[in-house]
Every structure is written in C-alpha cells, then in structure tokens.
Image (cartoon, rainbow, N blue to C red; front, side):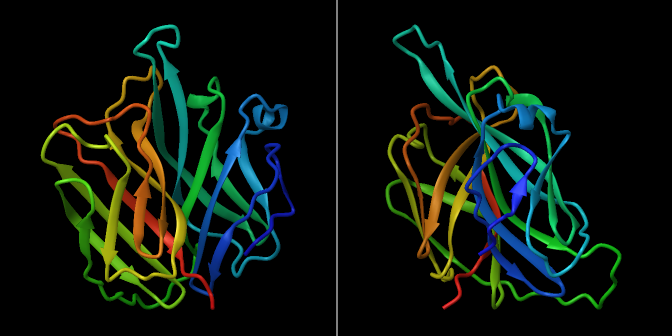
Length: 245
C-alpha cells in the first residue's frame, strides 16, 4: 500500500494499492476531488507525490474519471446520471504520478478518479513476453445477459480483465447487477468502473456505473437512473493488484 506524501489538487486521504517490479507498476485507487477547491482550480496537471516507485518514468497509460449530474431537479421524474471518461496518466519521476486534468465536470459537485492502471517503463527495451490467457465463466445472478471480447490475464502479483456485455431487453440495471467470475482470482478487491452507455445528462462522456469486485464477484448497485439502450455495449477494463498474503 502506498500512502502519498501529498498532491497539488487539495485532496486528502488517498490510499493506493500497488504492485511494483522492474518491468511494471500496477496501481489501484479511488479518490474524490472537490472541483471547487482552489488548489484543483490552479492545477494544470494533477500530481500525486509518493515515496520512491520502482522506476522513474513511464509511457502514457489510462485511468477513469467519473461524476454524477442530477437532471430535472424540480420535476417528479428527476434522475441522477453517472457520467465518465478516460484520462491519460503517467509516472513523471520516482516520486510523482501524473493524471490529465480534463475540466468537463468542473461545475458538478464532485469528481471521482479511478486508478486501475498498469504503467510500463519509458525508454527501456526488453524481450516481449506473451502472457497466458485465463478462461473465465461469467455467471449472471439476476439478468439474462452475455459477454463478448473477453481477455483475462493472471500474473503472480496482478491481473487484467476486459469484457463487454449485451442484454436481451430493457430490464438492465433495474436492480443490483451481480456477476460471479468463475476462474478469476479471489484475492482481488477493487473499485470497478463500467461505461459505454448512453445518458441524458448535459455534460460530455459516456454513461457509467461504479461498483466493486470482491472475491471473484462483481456487484454494481442499482443506479437512480438506468443507462440502457439499443446499440450500446457496456464494458469493463482494468488492471488489478492481487492482495498479498
């Protein structure tokens, strides 16, 4: 676990779960930013200051930004939509993690940043080692759904999973969304971001939900507004640290 020494955007109580080697750094975290904070307003790039990482500079990687907007607040049909998008992130030096600042949600109440990220060292060439793909079985507990474009990689200290989902009707996310991942490591516990959906908020980005992956089970609580529609396939994409015994 990494406890940052500070940041330049006025956020407190950040904790980062980490796996580090000479080849990769994998980081997992979720933290909330107040976009009205003066330090955030003055920052051009979000910087998190940490103790020494295993290497000093990385290539660009990705993380997620998410917020919520209440629409039609004075109406009986008011709804809160989750929205989000992808941000660039990189390791600037051994003590600085950088995240792109994208101000599209600066007028909303809060912004969540979700790190589910693998960084590779910049400027270092090594032989390419192909990882073995792990096969999974998706068990849907309360929806008639199916998955596609699945790729799962399991390594000693970290793992990767991406998949997209389709449903067979308009009942998607009318209750908690629960999937058991048979064959996935049970020592992974992270905040999970799912996106690729429509929304009716008046800000950019895709519709998104936030859930948890614990002990091989994905749980996404029922949202206040469902984001379902034909022609959309929500997806997950994350690198996760495996808990050390």
